Length: 112
Image 1 (spheres, helix red, strand yellow):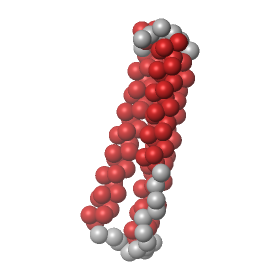
Image 2 (cartoon, one colour):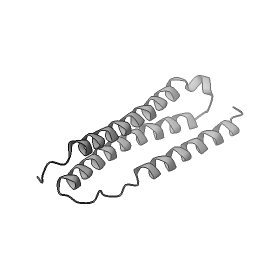
Image 3 (cartoon, one colour):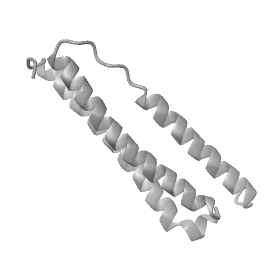
Image 4 (cartoon, one colour):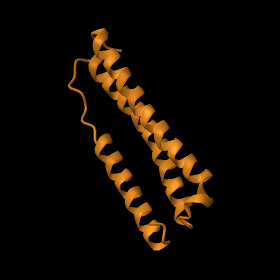
């Protein structure tokens, strides 16, 4: 399928997916920590929701990272421009919403 791109571009593409997977792992680790510390943090029912949101974001991020890597690889092999990505903006918005949810939960439960 297409011609081989310059190896440096393929390696850059691979480094990018590894960075996204590292971010995915950090989100999942955060979800696990929240779940394990649910009694200590005293966020009430919000703790479960926040942990679930982080775990869901991690799963979606992993899937999107692979799809982005694949689209970029195909575009490079066919000499096409790289497709645009909203992955970073989407991730930032989701993390901001989870942070707001955590802050509200702490305020309502007297955690701050």
